[in-house]
Every structure is written in structure tokens, then in C-alpha cells.
Length: 151
Ligand SMILES: Cc1cc2nc3c(=O)[nH]c(=O)nc-3n(C[C@H](O)[C@H](O)[C@H](O)COP(=O)(O)O)c2cc1C
Image (cartoon, rainbow, N blue to C red):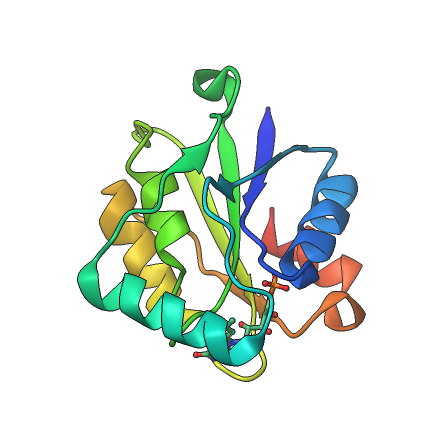
């Protein structure tokens, strides 16, 4: 079984978790990157991202997953933005055919759960997805929990 961990991360928290999850599962990784840079400061970022979400913009992405068809399972990691997944994740999901894939959403956030992100991932892949996993950061990532979740 071939597994991919694809993730978007603005400030590195999700990226760190995604790499650890990939290591635990023996999976490949793919970083979802936008062509545009988000501003470094929090207040400016909030403004830009809010506008992007309100307008339904699909930010352009850099590159694509090599041999996407070969993967049986895809883990999709993202930071929660305004309760759900960032628009970069929507851009990513709309680029591929998800039929027949086992999809596992995961997120990092300061407090919000994964439910809305999970619902959006199901919507944009057109598939049922596995129950998602939310963590605050790498410190709250539990290796045993990851193994049980990914069974
Ligand atoms: C634009 C923006 C919106 C956010 N919205 C939420 C939110 O609704 N709920 C929450 O708990 N955290 C929210 N956060 C915090 C991030 O989800 C959290 O810091 C995340 O771990 C950052 O991951 P990253 O380093 O991979 O980008 C938001 C952060 C940003 C920049």
C-alpha cells in the first residue's frame, strides 16, 4: 500500500507534524505551496486570508504530486483558517481525481476542531473521508494515536 502525506503550512507547525506522520507511516510527503507569499505578520495574514476565503479564490499552486495515481492513501494536512481548511487546500483538491483513494484529513490549530475541514475535504474530493485528527502542534502528536488512526 502506497501512502502520501500532502500538507500546506504557512508557519511550519503543520509541516512539522506532517513530516512526523509520514515518518511513522513510512509515507512520501508533498508540500502544497502557493505561488503567492502570505504576509509574515499575523494581522496582515488574517486580512489577506479572510479576503481570499470570502471571495472563494483558488490560489495558484507550485508544482503537482508526481505519480499521484499510484497512491492508495492520502493524508491531507492543513492549519485551520477561520474554522476550516485554507483555500490552498481547495486548489489542491480540485487538481486531482480522488475516486478510490482512502483520504485522511488532519490539522493543527490553536483551538478549533477538524470537523468543518473534514466536511470541506469530503465536498471538494467528492469522496467519503476517514475521521480526521486535530493536534495543536508536534508536542501533542501521539505516535500510538497516529498508528491506530491510520489502521
Ligand atoms: C489566517 C489564519 C486563520 C486562523 N484561524 C484559526 C481558527 O479559526 N481556529 C484556530 O484554532 N486557529 C486558527 N488559526 C491558527 C492556526 O490554525 C495555527 O496557528 C496553526 O497551527 C498554524 O499552522 P502552520 O504553522 O502550519 O501554518 C489561524 C491562523 C491564521 C494565520
